[in-house]
Image (cartoon, rainbow, N blue to C red):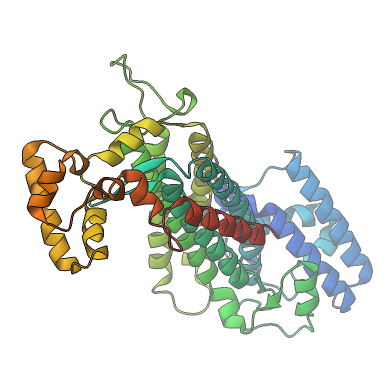
Length: 460
Ligand code: ARG
């Protein structure tokens, strides 16, 4: 008979048992469920809602069940529906009557909300640790490449020269924001819902605050209806994970492009590439492609969760059981991708010379040529036009700007002098961009120092 079977005349259809059951995917909440139950039982004992002896026996047996689960000695049952009732059933099978007292003043509705919040707090910590490691690897690569000049792009057209360090540090900023978002999301996850009951609290004198303290929560939920109905914390986590994946996916797209024969800016290590079953010469950036691809399923989880929540009236509805698969899949995907992505980046070869050559082509110093004229008194719009014509002329001559003769420069403007060559060398273009946040060596070194400080703050 079901734990809730008293009111029923018939047993559930086997197909419905199967349909209704969530044990297949919520069994991963076993530890949270047991720790939550232990805190609840202790409090019930302290408040004299159950006897001290019963509370102690429940806690002791729950710990035994925990270790049995971890030793693979427990079989969960589909017709016990979910992790909460499976564990309660095992407890009752072991200690009978006493086990049946555990669920006093509690509902599975506040129990599942508690378990999921506990699980997500740990998951957020785990993700943060992985993203910190990735960020720290990226900072390391940046430190070694503050003088590695490369072309910067807009519209995937060569734009202005930058350094590889500056490019990498752009991603460092994104991952630092991801860390910040996760820690913010954790604040709203770190609220203890037990005591909300099914929806309307309980008549027992529960001490919710001691349960929160016991479980390491910073606060308790303020409204029992909200306590069992709120999944905002799960939505926020799914959003944070979507943005993390989006950042890695953009980066992956660049690495895929840069690994192509046409770019050849980087080469993935053999250990992080795969071959073709037919073309013997191929070395494909599959890892980066898979990360780009898996981003879609994490977005899918976010959309799935948002859509699942949008129409359900207060308070608990069974629809919400659907939150876990989406959330767990997103989590598994992020925790799978971040370390692989980090190792792929740590081992890739950076072709500094090819990057440097790339910065030469495509008139990436044209802005600096215009700035040269401006610094000698010309209005920027006029300078823009002069250089535009100069570029058009240079293309027709098949020359770069610094390959033009002094006479050719003079034909376009009398302002040009022999110091133009130095002013438009790619090295000057980078070193002159030295304001806060810009790509010059000193500025990037400041950015690196600041990023290290921010990263340390997250580790605390
Ligand atoms: N397995 C359920 C879930 O994941 C637990 C809560 C069930 N509550 C209920 N009243 N049916 O949401």
